[in-house]
Length: 437
Image (cartoon, rainbow, N blue to C red; front, side, top):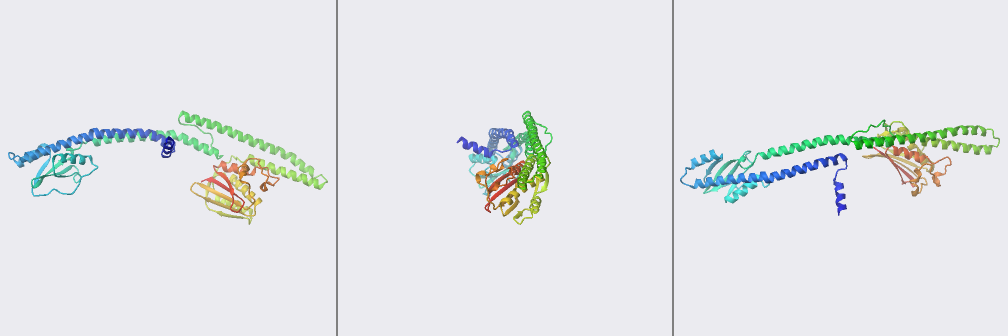
């Protein structure tokens, strides 16, 4: 039961920190204002209204009883009643009280007036809406009725509006001040999240300057230290791989020169193939080392990029369905390398390749399908691991060191996207690349 309520509250509550903090600040103020208003309305305004209405009906009852006394002059009594009580009274003979009902069930004034009139008179009618400041009251008398024009101030307390104004304005003022302070407190968190997102995409964010409360500053300092450690680690990895690859090129070049002097052509050819294979491996190492390029991102038309990449192949095996004018912010050369890698794999193992590019509200989706032999489902995750090769039809190339898919995956993930492998409708493998739009 408690778990269900907790889950319900989690769904109802806002997700963003700013609105949660605002709710924490604003909710007590609003609840307190409501409680104070209800207490004031019930204990003061309604009771005061009830007492004033009861006094008014008592005065009208006294006037009618005095009007029945033959000792008093009727006109003088009405004039005196108007002067002393500020209520105009008229006797309208040979008239019937209107049957139209102007009473408002939701109005405390109307409810109280109806209750007091009902306790004193058998037949009556009143209207509180036609006139802004006057109540039109008619009470049955003999063959006609008395008409009273009563000021609304006689039955309502004007301080209620002032009280409502004074209790509402400070509440809105406090909430407005809270909005300003909360915005200033949440801004450093948003900046930290944006810096983390950019760094995760491989973008250069420069020197991050923490700001805000002490705890947020501490998180910012730790993020900056972590960022510098990661950059240092990546630079060391790149330098190491580049150094190894560069150092190996020199002896390979000498070996190639020595092979030209070998008289046994069959042996020379086999050794030359091994050297070429090693050179290709070194190129893959260098690509892997430079997969996190420090180039800044730029806005470009990814539709045009995909079409240009496909056009360079000039291959009848490739067909495409490209949605035009899709703008993406990223590293153009790295995205091209990733797309080229997947298309190369599809062409290597299939005779038909279909490329589709589309977008929805939040993402850009690139699909690359082929009719090749595919790969086992249990290997979908493994193929993205560096230096991993499967002994299937898709990994028969001896020149492959198992870094192509890893490099392509690293590029896509660094741009905030993801790659998913599925069974293709063509019978082979489908590569689904999703990038944030």
